[in-house]
Length: 507
Image (cartoon, rainbow, N blue to C red; front, top):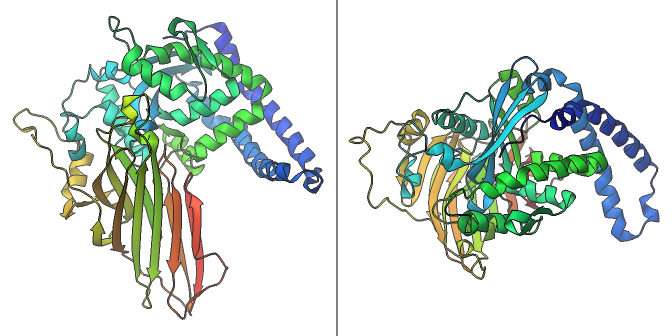
């Protein structure tokens, strides 16, 4: 469970700055070499790879330069002035939650003087078993839990909001104060395993690789662990130090590939960072690495957050499509129609937890003040035997209390405000080998204003960590309006990262 304070680990950690400088030199050299490459001389199948590499090299250089140049930020985080204690949460997107997945395990990372002093990996229920407070959970979670705790605390789409709640609960388990929270999604581990290669665990008669990691670890957690010892997460504790050694070996020889995976992980929200120290948090927020909800003031906005509540690990087999159609009327008002379809591709897996119905509480975040016009496809699910929290003297969470005070209902749709957005939420149950569709129509709280016959319309999509979706966005204009920049009014894309679409309009 503990990596300890080995001199070897300390030397590796202290060498990070030198390696970053070396990586920057190599990336500069690679970019110069790529400028000399004539892609037309290569076969067609290689030309796309060359183009992608040219596009990624400047991004990688920027990332390395940030790590190197901003030591004023990194040094305090690495305990140069005082020891720091961080909580790393491991999220399993097979059971999707607002920030990327169920928190099954966590690590405590202690650093001081730019060295790792301790890292421990534990199961989340080890901590929650020591929780000293009884807190009323959000209403949807009351279907599966009578009390709110750390493993369900990533309830908010905005990662800083969830990270604050996670750290609050975690400290209420008797743990010492933590200085920040980092989330790592299972997708990142799978991608890193493509670089490290298989990691053998002889004591489990098991070899973990990119293809089987999720299934085999889930099997050990659900079925294969030693029932006498009763430590289902031990497999992760045993895997991690071996995996870290492999990563260091990769760092020696495949820096560019490793940086590329980490850069993608930050962009796709498979890594999200939160620090209690304000300057550090502001720095990472400016680079888009905190999973913060976009303000998008006076702009159109959409985020769809699925929450698997009692649907086992079926999120892994859910395929999602989002079709959004916005229509601007002659007076500038905007009406939106949103269709969210989900297909459950499970049902034939040898693992039972993939074959169950997917039970999803979906939260649709739109601009604050949007008004629901109509809906189809959602369901209302009430808790059959609600707990009498008042008689049990449970405490209310102030953030949840504020949200639920704004809540109203329209048929199966819950309507409330969260983090400066209006939310339309409903239940969707999808059986294996079946599909489900939710459609809503709503009006926006602002208009497209034209000044001297010219105006703008901006749409911001935010993806949910741990998910991707086939998306289509359509903008319909009044007859006498046109788009000046020739930006397509209908666009199809994979929503695997946040995306912004801007239009310049003229009447």
